[in-house]
Amino acid sequence: MTTALRNIAIIAHVDHGKTTLIDVLLKESGMFRDNQKTGERMMDSDDIERERGITILAKVTSLVWKDVRINIVDTPGHADFGGEVERILHMVDGVIVLVDASEGPMPQTKFVVSKALKMGLKPIVAINKIDKHDQRADEVLDEVFDLFANLDANEDQLDFPVLYGSAKQGWMSLSSDGSSKDGMDALFDMVLDRVEAPKVEEGEFRMLATTIQSDNFLGRILSGLVVSGSIEPNMPIKVLSRDGKVIETGRVSKVLAFRGLERTPIDKAEAGDIVSIAGLQKATVADTLCAPSVKIPLDAQPIDPPTLSMTFRVNSSPFAGTEGSKVQSRVIRERLFSEAQGNVALKVQEAEDADAFVVSGRGELMLSVLIEKMRREGFELGVGRPKVVFRTNENGQRLEPVEEITIDVDEEYSGAVVQKITERKGELLDMRASGVGRTRLMFHAPTRGLIGYQSELMSDTRGTAIFNRVFHEYAPYKGDIAMRHTGVLISNGVGNAVAFALWNLEDRGPMMVEPGTKIYRGMIVGEHTRGNDLEVNVLKGKTLTNMRSSGKDDAVKLTTPMKMSLEAALSYISDEELVEVTPKSIRLRKMILDPIERKRAMRAKAS
Picture 1: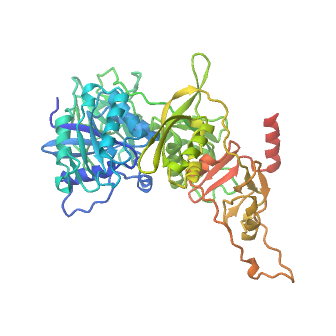
Picture 2 (picture 1 turned 90 degrees about the vertical axis):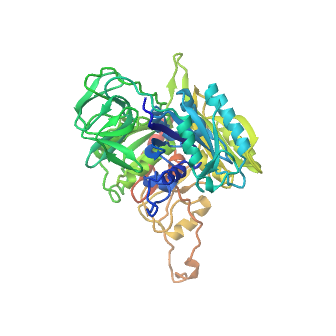
Picture 3 (picture 1 turned 180 degrees about the vertical axis):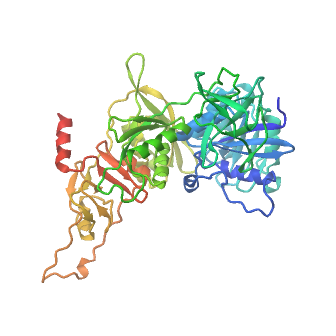
């Protein structure tokens, strides 16, 4: 047993402060010089992570406290990235459950904690943001205990230690009335006392690949926990799949250890440590890296299945290739299959159409992040409406994914929320106060009914609602659900949108484009106030005569157009529509651009 190591993960809901906590731990442990310049949220290295304030990729850092090296894994807080969470939990021997002193344990906390408790990991509860004016630490502690009890925690796990503090102010204490003078000593000491040293197995080198990254110089870099033996550069190695087949053999080119925020080459890695290995060409996540004589692979943690799929198509609009550099189906295919290699929660399949691919994942956020990454890399895509992944049980019954939803909302809007969720086949589970004038609503609702609901929720509650969701189970199909109730306004020509035309069309519904926007035939330019689609001309300017000049009555005042984010656009479109995604633009369009062909296809579908 290795005594000079501790491996822990930090579990928290989105925006409960875990990445900020890791920043403070690194500084407190002396990983940086006193005069060294450091930024905020240092572990969020990805551009999208920094912009959205969420952790998408699991990352490892390490520090030394009282001659003990502590490997810390920063886990994603959103359930859509649960594939990351499940893979890393087998690497650690304890978890810090970080909970907001005001919001309490949230759905994503429940999701990850349930995984950790089933694996027998001992939790340390840290109640963060104790300095908030609406903190309710005692109530939150009771909620955490109830959560653990409901998740069938054993007696040892229920006897968890509790810390109170403020990661932003840089302190954690055994009592809620501590101060910044306490620093992080209590948390460090708790980890050394509560978390066991890694359990090392006998035998030759074995390691389960947990995460994969690509490096321009080193190629594939596979990270994981060394379960047994040791590994050195230039050692012969082989890779076993989950069913025991040999995938490849080779030699280790580099062994890299996590030291602070950097990966550092080391001469030897011992069992119990979390390291990265370079030099392999085919190995991927959930494979076992081992010595040549090993024949039995390590058990891989099961991954919850994808619940949502989207069709990624080659961009076929008239503007294809004008804004992006990567437009061919071959390039898109390589990029998608490369992503699927490192993300076991993602599935990519060839569609019947040679220029389309079906991509399945854990939720809208996960897939939209992938699309956002691709557009920043120069890709152009046409993306279809998200669809749920159905199953059939042994009795032939159709099953669909159901999610547990938690919505915190002002009391005055709770009735409207309950009504809308009920219309989408949701069932109300619980309604309770969650602060002054706030109500917490909990539902079970089919994933199918939640597509596109978040933007509607924000509109119904004047932007005051906090919406969280997590996969619950596959349940019997709940019947038809009425989705978008309005039609769209479709351009009947090609050119640049004209202010006068947009102004004349405002009584038809809100517009989605502004004057000067490039328009093509079949592109969606607005929302119709009625349930049918309508072809409109947004290119027609004001006719000038001797009696009417381009005077002051030509200065029209337009209502601000609807600006769609990528997630909002994906959830807004119907099955006959696409979102055109390029590095510069997000456009909505009909799948069939020609109106005559579109009507012919609708008649054929109806018959």
